Amino acid sequence: QWKKAGMVQVAPFGSWNSPISAERVLQGATRVEACRVSGAGVWWSEFRPQQDARSQILRRGRVGSAVEVLPAPFSAKTRIHEYGGGAWWCDGDTLYFSNSADQRLYRLDPDSSPVALTPPSRTPDGLRYGDGVVTPDHQWVIAVMEAHPGEQWCPPEATEPANLLVAVPTSGGDPVPIRNLADFVMAPRLNRDGELLAWIEWSHPSMSWDSSELWVARLDCSGEVPRLAGAHCIAGGPGESVLEPRWDPEDRLWFCSDRTDWWNLYYFELPGIPSGTPRAMSPAPHDVALPAWGLGGSRYGFLADNRVVFAYSSDGLDHLGMCDVTTGRVEHLPVPCTDISMVATSSASVVMIGASFRSEAAILAAAVGQRGLSGDLTAIS
Image 1 (tube, one colour):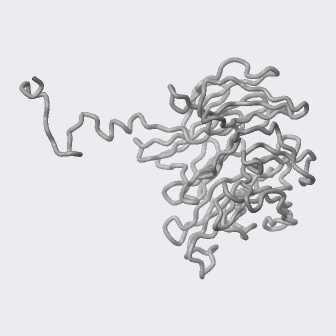
Image 2 (cartoon, rainbow, N blue to C red; image 1 turned 120 degrees about the horizontal axis):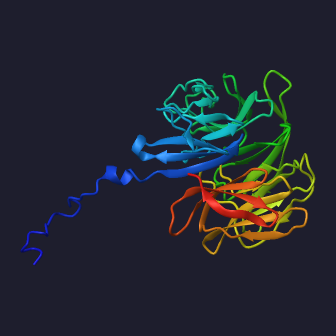
Image 3 (cartoon, one colour; image 1 turned 30 degrees about the horizontal axis):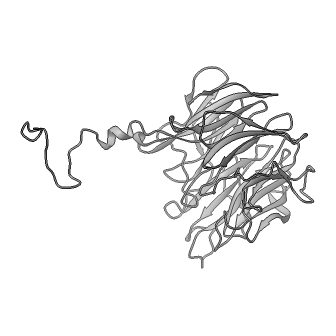
């Protein structure tokens, strides 16, 4: 009957006409990429295919609605390690980001225009930056730089890119290499006073989730340029994957390790230079870290009262937990999410990228009290 009415059309495979165009699909394809808590606001990035595949950064303060931070045509996207990630970070209300068009590192102060900090590359996308942090004196950015053959910081005989830790003046200038011994580096993280730097490195043929190492060194900024002193490996090695180093407010170093075949959280009990055997926080058959395909991953964060909030994967679902480091007590925090890709915290709140079987990924936030979340998660994106 449909054929008789002319309602059915026969066409070769792959050539059917559809009222749903690619442009119409892309109109609803905005994706949340990363989130941070800095200054007096929550920051996050959105991938927007309908805007020439831009990655826009938004900021929302304690009051008011979200505002777009990047002026067109800037886009916070890095091609570092090809998979990208860690394309932007904050220092108070100042934003640092890798720009998609030229892969240079930029600084954006409030009520200003972006300013390029790093020199142009000799070859297309030959210098790439990501996963940075700013020193407490606001003078230097410590970041990962990928230098491709033909660039100044890649050996002339090299056939593949060099990956370095570099220091970039926040006023602009050439990057200063401070670490260039492994094939790959990521996650440079400074302690509270900026005197100690932790980072992850690994080399071929391993991937970061196979074998990687956690290193710590003193960062000496007393001279004309920063340098590392006393670098030594404190965790990881063959057959062990270590990820996501971070210093807590008490100056203790935390990280994730799969030494038990599960990426659990560990920390060194004494502040300052890590020593002794790290202690496992709530060892269990679950994964806190995720495979580090991209840079800038974060699945845990610290509150101001010696507690840590963390996401963990178990039985194919993600959950949110909280641990009191003093007592060792761990609480499950009920949230309507089955996927938690990123966690950030302030002194008394948690922000995360969460999704479920029924809702797409969004920026969710809640205050954290002594007995868990103070109220429901609120979507702010």
